[in-house]
Length: 250
Image (tube, rainbow, N blue to C red; front, top):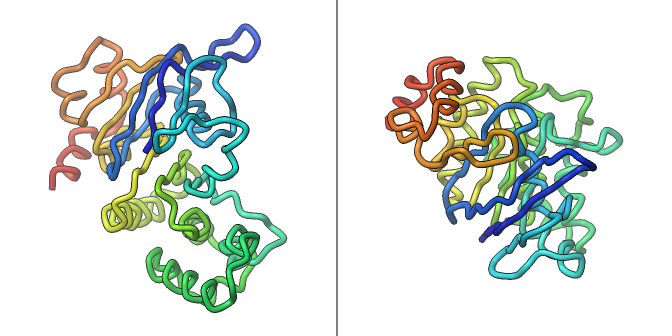
């Protein structure tokens, strides 16, 4: 569904991303990981058209992404950020249904989709009447996921969705998210800074450094056959990457 060829991005004299090729596997979860400022969030924003590459091409379902089609293409992508990125003046339900209402869905269709998604993300339906400030961090993230999924997108993009959560809530939501990814079998691209999380979610892990892809593959490839010393150093600096590998294989 997604194919990036030779994409690069500069901000003044700063290179956020050197010319990069990346084709996330359809129906699988690709995780982008690396130090702060390595280009992982830049790649994600290029995929959804929030920013334009200075060079190269982003293709979605075989069509180059451009000003003339980016709005339509975004309706086929779900996008999740930390805390869900919810509008504080809207209830959880109104946040979830915002785009569907804009597209003219009728009440019966909206109600059925909301009920389906609430069951999927395990959010009690009574929470949907509340405003974001009345919800916990984990609940806000579940609402954000519902909003991203409401139009049944082909691709789901997540930018450090669990980074702001405390460890207990994060662990529970990790398990729920992985179950959802496997059930829906959508193309997923997830950004994280945590190697354990990358190993838990990722069918393919893409490690970046200073705007370049250093290595990509399964977690065991990065652990057992690092492409360069930085890969080994990055993994060793993280907590329990081998435990994450065991969780993934189990």
